[in-house]
Length: 498
Ligand code: MN
Image (cartoon, rainbow, N blue to C red):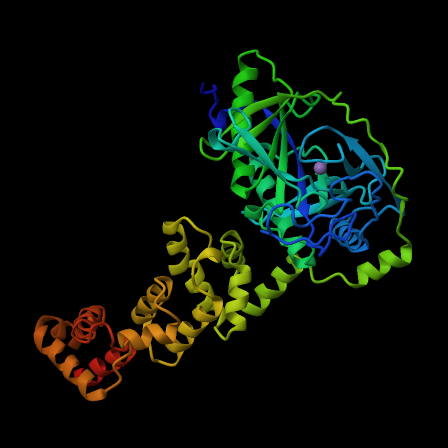
């Protein structure tokens, strides 16, 4: 049954949204959080295990020091207070993907305490997201339900469980309630999770690929009539695994909750899930704050002690952060603020940097990735990164243009060939014989014919009005199958008119 929704603009005019995000980031350590089981994406089911991953009796966990170091670096990047002493706790629940019957997480003594992250919005303004904590925990295994509709447990004939992921280290970054966002709540949420993605990539502590489940977010949101009111009852949408999904979850929940509240109804505190196919959230388990996980300190693990000296060592290893890098690249590339924002919004920063490294000019790289290639990605419904073309190939095409071998039109055709899988730019150029006609004789003849065919244009050009020169260039292009160098044609025409 379709739920009643209020128009977004009306909902944010009548209500003040307050939201929070719990973002899980999978760390890219070689081994699991509490045992030396190897971690590799896409391995055969149940091949990356030790007795500890399976919670077998008598097995004892030992903390992975690299995972702790990764978490400290993230804590530093998020301006968190790093606890000198932190502790793992057992979070008890029963579900077949968790063979010990408890998750090992951190409860009242997390490694990273309060912090914040400043995120840049589309219009260039900044918004400070307050962070409550960023704690370390292990992941559960993965259930696969077979025989039912859309992989859900309801109606399934049987279920399979893969424990390869059980014990993989996670950091859970929990924001405080984010107030004052108003109608920009979805945009702020998206910018925040993207900023987290950029930071963990810069720190090299996670692959941070949302589509592979390396990052996922739980989205909490409640509405209130005014910013002076106490917080309303919230919904929690679990495991949203795309940036767009996070933004749309917030939009949808704001519209849904506003419709209920304005009808005098009450919000049910529950966990929901985001359905990508219908672009809606659907209710799940009714949840209360009294959910009893019976947390207690894990007696198998000693407390984690982080000295000031160790934090200083980690601080010294911190790489350039994404915002500093962005500012540096903007000044190196001489892009305007607006150009740079377009690059960021198109998620093209890494690609342009790689293209420039491969020898292209910054403006040339930007032109291709934000122009032709963005259009292509849009029409294919994929990200720029997923297009079947490498930054070095874009650079090669750009270099062929700079060398005068290709004009813009031939360069586009070469790119189309590369995207169609015809090979490298050099192979595509060779296959189709793309080459600007530089043979003076052939070009002279084409120009002469174009001038002879267009006496009225020639008359205009002779009065000094050069606007219609495009007609002549077009005629030459047609004669040379697009392989003429427009600059050379222009100078020839000027020469002949003299
Ligand atoms: Mn968690």
